[in-house]
Structures are given as C-alpha cells and as structure tokens.
Length: 272
Length: 363
Image 1 (tube, each protein chain N blue to C red):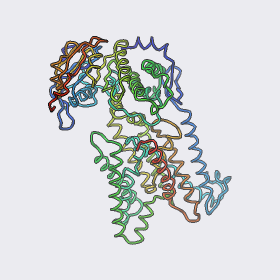
Image 2 (tube, chains in turn cyan, purple):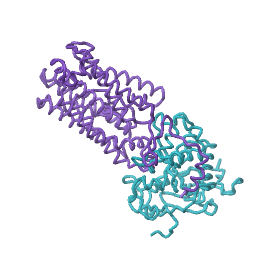
Image 3 (tube, one colour):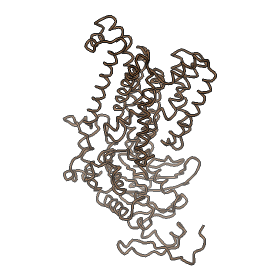
Image 4 (cartoon, each protein chain N blue to C red):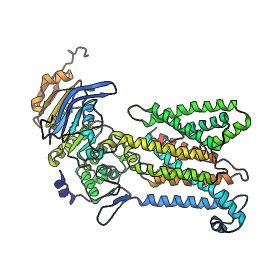
C-alpha cells in the first residue's frame, strides 16, 4: 500500500507499545520527501515513540515501517544507517573522547573490516564538522564542551553518515534559547542547502511553526492533524490538543503562525 | 544522493583525523585504518615490562640462576638443575601469570564497556563471587580435586553472571543496575560461603580459604595450556566485536542508529568474556582487582576515549606477572598468594578511582 511513490519513509497500521503498554494504534504516517517535518504534541502523546519506530529503534507490535518501499527491519543494520540517520534524545560521550573522534564514528556504516578510514571518510568528517561549525573544536574533548557545542558535535556525527533522511529526537532540549535557535537554523540550512529530509520532534509549538514545512500534530498516540503549519495550526486545534486557550497571530519575523496563550490570570479554574 | 554537494565542499574543508591518530592507507585505498602511535608505544612498553618480569621471576628464587644463564636454560641447555627449575617450575608459573592477567584484563574491559561503568568488572558484578562459591562448594561438599574445583568455579561464575544479567535487565541492561545487583548477589553468595566454612573441617576450610585468595603457586604446563587455549579461542572472538563494543559505549540508541546490531554484540561479548573469566579463575582462583584495574589503567595511559582491549590485555599481563614476582619475593622464603598483592594494589587503585570520580562529580 505505497500510494505515494515519492515518500521514502512511511508507516502503516502501526501499533506501537512498550511491553504491554500500547502507545499508538493503527497509526499511518508518511514523511514527505525533502520536507522539514516536525512532530509536536503534549507530553506523553507518543511523538518520540513514533520517531523511534520510524528509526527502527522500536519494533512495532503490529504494522510496518517502510523505507524506500521495503520493510525497514528487512534491511541489514548498516544499510539502514546509510539511508537514515538518528540523533537520539540522549547519547553518551565516553570519558575523554575527542570531538573529531566522535564525529568520525558517524562513518561506521560506510566502513568495513579492511576499510576503516578511507580518504573519503576523512573528507566527509571534515565537511560535517565544517557545516556544523565545530571544526575549531576538533582536538578538544567532548567533556569540556558546552551543551550547545556538544549538540552540534552529535549532529556532525549523524551528518557524517551522509544519509538523505535525518531523524532528530528533541534536538533542542537542555539548550538555552540562543542555542535552540542556533540548532534549528542549522537544521533549516541542512534542509534547504543540502537537501536532507528532516524529521524532528520538538516541544515548542512556535519553533515548530517557524521551521517546519510539514507539521504532524499528535495527541494520545494518534495523529490529529498534519500539513503546512499555516493551514494546520488554528486556535481550536491547539485548545483541543493541548487544552490551552490561545490566540494565533502571524510571527512578525517569518509570518508563520505564532501561538500566544490567552491571559487567564484571575479567571483560571482548576485544570485537569 | 548528496554526492555532488560533497565533492564541491570537499575542496574547502581541511582534512583531519581524530586526535592523536594517524591514518594508514594502501596505495589504491582498498585497505585503510587508523592507528595511534601512543597506543603502540604503551603496548610495547607493557610487553617489555612483562618480558622483564618473566626473565627475573625465572632467575630468582631460593635456587638462584644468573640472568646470563637463563636463555640457555629456557632452551633446555645449561645445567640440569637450571633447566629443571626454569622449564619445569618457574617458566610455566610466569606464563600462567601472563595468560591469566591477559584474560582478566580483556574480560574486565568487556564488562566495563557493556556496563559503561568503571566498577563493572567481574569482581564487582558477582562473577568472581559466584566462581568462588562454586569452588568452595566443590571443595567442601564434594571433597573434589583440582579439576572438579575448577569446573565448579566456572559453573558458579556462569550461573551467577546469568542470574545477575537477568535481574539487571529491563529494556536492555543499565550499567549501574548491573553493578548494584551484582553487589547484592555477591553479598548473598559470601554468606553462603561463610555458612559452608562453618560446617567444614579445618583442613578443608583452609584449602578453600587459600583457593579463594587466588594463587599461582605450583601452576604447571597443564594450567599454561588451559589458559592460553582459552585465550587463543576467545580473545579473537572478543577482538572481532571490539569495534562494535566501542560504539555501544555511545548509548544503545546511538549505536543502533549507526548500524551496530546492539543485542548480538552484547550477547557475543558477554558470553566470551564470561568464559574467559571462567578460564582464568579455574586456573588461578579468583585473583581480585586485575580485571577492575587493568582496563582503566590501560585507557588512561593510552589516552583513548573508550575501551582498548589489547591495551587491557597487555596491562593485565604486566600487572599480574609483576604482582606474582612481588608475592614470591616480598617475604621469601614465605610465598604469598598473588591475590594478596593484587588486592593491595587494586584496593589502592579503587580508592583513587572513587576519589577522582567523586571529585569529578560522576558517582
């Protein structure tokens, strides 16, 4: 049932669960090629779970995730890693590992027992560091970096995989506002200039509206709306999904929808 | 794909290799790898230390053999008594020490890597305690000889490792959980051993007690064969998954995102490392702290971020053969079990490790 031949990554009839706890049932999703897709929704709505299923980190209890028309779990692990890169929510940098060393790890799916460090590996790593702006940090230890720098290094590692698809699980968590915008600008550049298809889970609705070309809104494990932010995001939708009365005004900078919570001071009743 | 973009940008970006590493490539680029000169130097130095300790431990003792006479004796020439002591007694003991040290070093590196915890060695996660309990049970309940005691140790170790692994598992294995469960299980096993001891007669209890400290006294060519065959079979298996192990240290999801099959790597590494620990313990008893300290020392000396399996092996060998030399000579003619010496070295190391981790705010 691949109705859209130009969608490289889709999921159909997905039931996603951890042990016995079902998060999503009968979910259908497709990631438009060359889009910057952002998945949003309230806490515990299943957005990270969906991303984990799309990145084959979580095996669906039912249904299939298809990558280029084939069930994703039928590919060898390295083959998937050459097409689809993943930046998980939490990664661990081993004590004392160097920046270039970590970025170089991204070349693993392109390497073999005999070819562990080709000149192409070297060039791609250099390029990935250049485009994330971490070249100057090459000889530093990852431990010594700030949160924002560290996140750029992890992104560089995933870029070194040279995958057309990039999946990012809450890439802006733990960053301050300046570094959040920094990270998102970087993602937008990767999308616009290098033609990556990006899928990101984001917490901040305004960030999502600003950067997404395609928005997926989730609630209770189901997709309740998707499409271009300007057409999808309405005050009704936000109230329905987040239980928060809002006004929507155009962002003065980008003219994308901007969500402003209604002032409820003094009138606030107890929230469930 | 983005290949055209890649080649455009390639000219602009300067080439670079990871810190401290050099690239080696065959002329047509079919074979390429990275090596670290510092790791090479450290490795050679450790080999030199082991060899020096081997020569010294072969030459000194109640019956002194001048170092100049050692080479001849090693090859079977020279005085009859020299040849007897060197080939029949001291050389096998030293070779056992080197083999057991290497086995413990590798196994410790694997366990620490899998648990992502410097304390995650077989000593701490219960394997050693399980092996000791198995051996003590064999000695005290079955009155067994050395071979059965060894088998009891291996069985006890494997069963305990399996139990700890299962208890610690919940959506994959978390390092700290492995350590905590291991400490708990070790404590329980210690009480089982204590109980067995109270029921045993004095000679048996003494034998069991000595076994539990770990010793290389009177180890011969049979033990050399056992531990080195174990190494020859298992070390290549572990080295083959070594690269994947280092990727798992980035976190399971990250590793899987990079195309590393996490579960098969974990299972292969865990099984091989358990068997290697078992072989070492079967031969020398539960010698403590080598598996804990060797991988960390090797890693600090080579300054690699992450595990270095070969470094851990060489460091384990050097530590154990030197410790055994100290054990033999420190209170000569009284021979200490080598476990006493490693416990002193390892205990100091553990305190230092905890101290620096506390200061770094990591524990």
